[in-house]
Image (cartoon, rainbow, N blue to C red; front, side, top):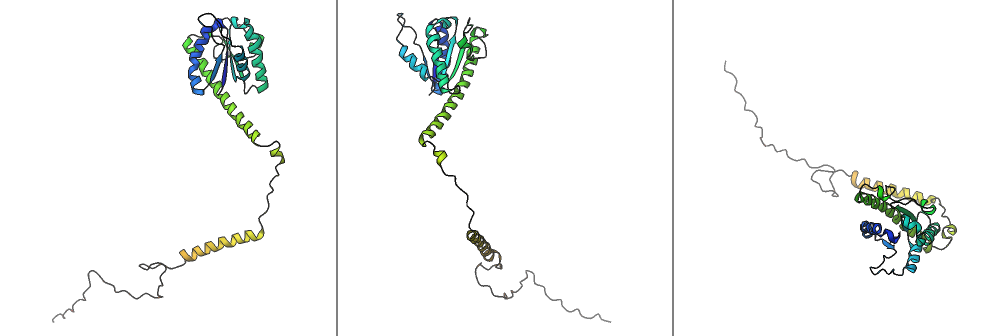
Length: 246
């Protein structure tokens, strides 16, 4: 299960809600675990999220940063989310942990965010001619990233499980198998066996003569008795013609 971390500022919750609505099909298709800082309650009280945020930052596979002037000024984004995400990527590797930014209107970026590739075909959301088309392009690009990241993690899990199953240095200490020549007596016996099977097949199937009406395997006399020739229209000898009178 891939874990996706969404970074945003509470002032950009409208963009977050729209993105979550478009991510729901991908969440169901790839069984994603999408997490973000909980939204403020209608009473105005902000729920406690600090411990969950730290755990999700250290376990996520994909980080999506909604970049806006509000998030560039947010302390939890600049001092906690970005440094921890970069540290986790440096620890696991860029092929296993990926970071992307989604530029929102008015976002100029920062030194840390500029190193992250932007997700989507448009530079900013306000560059989209239509929100419907823009979010569709965004989710298509995101699906390609999720599919590739899922395949990479499956290969990594197979590799680590194989390394755990085998002891250290198993491949290095295993003796190399040496090819030995076939003994002479074995090759001669093999040739004699092939010769015996071919000759026996020939004398059993090809050598005996076949006679019409005689079952195979029966003793056939050297000369068969002559059979009378019966003709459908027997020929009668012609009658003698009397001599011509003078």
